[in-house]
Length: 391
Image (cartoon, rainbow, N blue to C red):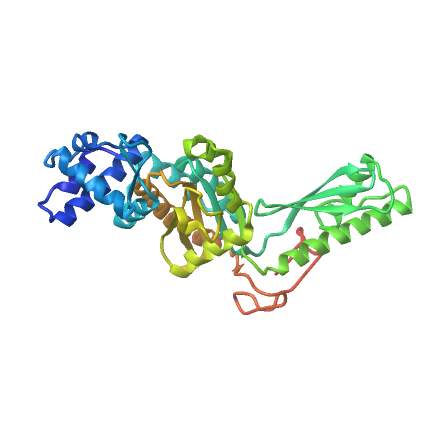
């Protein structure tokens, strides 16, 4: 943030109330830049030369009484409270800005049409976390035509397996399978080939023993039925998160208690969904600062969340949010998240049309699809080269 930005707050001849607000907004902006308490002389040197230090101190005293500022020490400078950050965020929510290199990074990432639509948001969120240096969480509809591409079986112990399902869209799903008898690693490699054969992706395999064939069939049936049931039953938006380690870069989260309070939101899918749904209902950029987060995380957490909906074909389909401390560059983040929403909406819409992919919002099992059709389930497609779950 440049000094010119502060000067722009005092370019006119405002009334006393306007001057007081300009001083408060200028202090918040300077605090966001410097990260330390702001004294009257410091603020005067950064765009408020027309006001005396005494006048600024009087404003500071009044704002402290009103709950906008606080002092860590009697003779120290002031720091903004959550109430001041809220005033600042409201004042500049529609005046966000971005750096050119940030815009280029998002454009390079998001202006790519791909069939791996399920991973677009995940990859975009990871890059967005790098750019913003914040933790990211988002909601997503359920995309159809996502067929199982491959299956890997990992032995956890002689009678327990982890089945890893890899889909056409690049998503990975796991299922833990308990066996009624011990198996060896050699059996698992043959069993994986058996899966591919059942999905018309490989040649037929033979087992040395009938018991192995029955075990492989049981594993296959269990994994596929679980996958299909989980895929059809879609009562809540898919939620994902990334960039949690970015919070360690902020001094505000050096206190383990403060870090744990903020991370508690990212450990609770119900609360994340509630915030993202509220954002979608508002149909616009939404933010929560400090105690405004109390319904979602423990009171006293000095954190901030900024969220915005994204669309597919002009229909709100989910939302993405960033989490950081209260001292975050609001104006830059407002600009970034608005651009992100526009570009991810465009990318998803183009990919859905190009690859003829349908998607659904959460529904109860057996409800109609977004296109009005009843869900159908096809476990095996022996006439084609893919195994489908046409949901």
